[in-house]
Length: 225
Ligand SMILES: [Zn+2]
Ligand SMILES: [Zn+2]
Image (cartoon, rainbow, N blue to C red):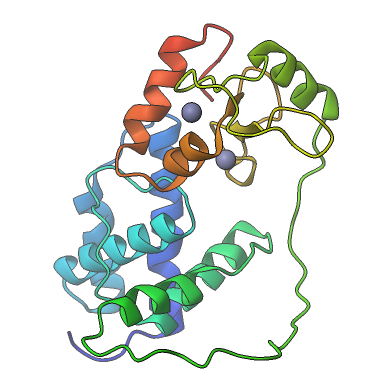
């Protein structure tokens, strides 16, 4: 790879990525190659190098539990610092303070692949940091309605809740199919009740797109956003 990417270049790539992802979600047609070629001529890099960067952004999306652009397979050949910078650019461009998870998870992955990972000492007193994180005001009636509708079962795999909480409720989680951070609504037509396994899988699993599609097929109340 040629010279270091400036923040400006990285920002342009992330901006283009966010736009493509939103077009894809809204069924708007676009040609990836045209977008790379515009970026390439603006910054004097090859189209291919922008395509690789886009795959790095897909990797960051995957660490964030987001859906990446189809056809842009996540590529993890990116340092944890760069991955963190991409994450912070996503927050900046979207105008929200997302919880920062990428640098940590990228480091976990890189340590795991080390040949001789010695037993770590860890940190006796982990340092505290206070961060402001954007959250969404949700409607408790929506969650209540879906939990009643699901009656203690996962709407994805059909299993019973894996355990009962201390206050005697079956433990089932709510998932928004189009994420609130992506502009999704907090309504019963966009949310489902999932067991923790299915919930993690629909965020991070290899088959998450299929799983998501199957939810729309299975539950007639859902409306794609
Ligand atoms: Zn399940
Ligand atoms: Zn979720």
